[in-house]
Amino acid sequence: MKNYLVIGNPIEHSLSPKLHNFWIKKNKIDAIYSKQKLNDSEIGSLILKVKKKLIDGVNVTIPFKQKVIPFLDILSLEAESTQSVNTIYLENNRLVGHNTDIDGFSLSIKKIDFEVTNKEALILGAGGVTPSIIYALNKMNVSKITVTNRTREKAENLKKLFKNLDIIEWGNITNFDIIINTTSVGLNTKDEIQLELPKEIKNKLFFDVIYNPQETNFLKKGKELGNKTENGKNMFIHQASAAFEIWHGVQPEINNDVMRLLD
Ligand code: ATR
Image 1 (tube, rainbow, N blue to C red):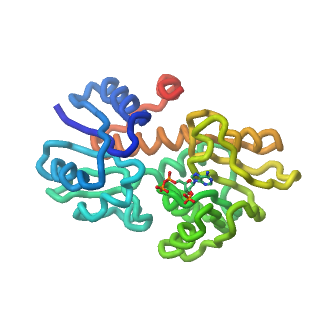
Image 2 (spheres, helix red, strand yellow):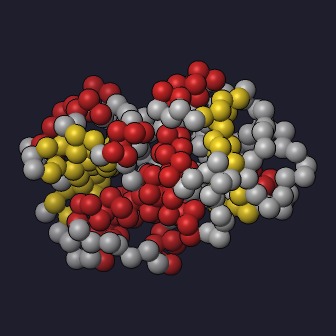
């Protein structure tokens, strides 16, 4: 039986096992997908197990997406460009790090009817998933990307990876066509991002990487003002589906049963 897992800290709330095990069963694959909470000092020995073929694939979540990199042999272009790895596998005896969050975001945007090309994007936050979103937006040819983060330095650091960013003070709002929340504010239903949104903001896209709760206060506000909204559920499902395809060579079906699994 093949052995897959997601590593992170915290990890209790990860829905990856539920999703992957559903697809594993559907496709009659002899495998199991579990989750493991790690400390920084345990990353190396865990990844060594992939090299020794004791583990067949690893998903990586917060706070390890960058921290796993020194233990890998090669990175895909996407992982290298974002310095972010969420999927690990062995290929020709080399440990490969890849990033499927990028495709996850791009595909979730493609699913909704909102043209991104030549539009201006404003990103809230500069955490683990932010580089993947910037990379995806660049690939979709947005005209401008602005980042604002509570800790400004972390936003400034992103300029080392992406030259074309504008950084503004936290809480300031510039013009935007798409606004994306990549912060963890909203995970608790009562959380509210302290933002002064102009009242006339309309027909824009409000995207939140959070999918539980399904509608954060950020999305609620966007909707009330007359904007399109999208949560992170499809992004999550598509990043998982891309990892599944890499590991098992099968594209898993995304249907209503899958959507309901995550409710
Ligand atoms: P990490 O920072 O370890 O990558 P993350 O969950 O990926 O963790 O990112 C958390 C993001 O949410 C960061 O952008 C963080 O801002 P800071 O860099 O200033 O910490 C943001 N964040 C978390 N709590 C916040 C709050 N109460 N207000 C504003 N931003 C917040």
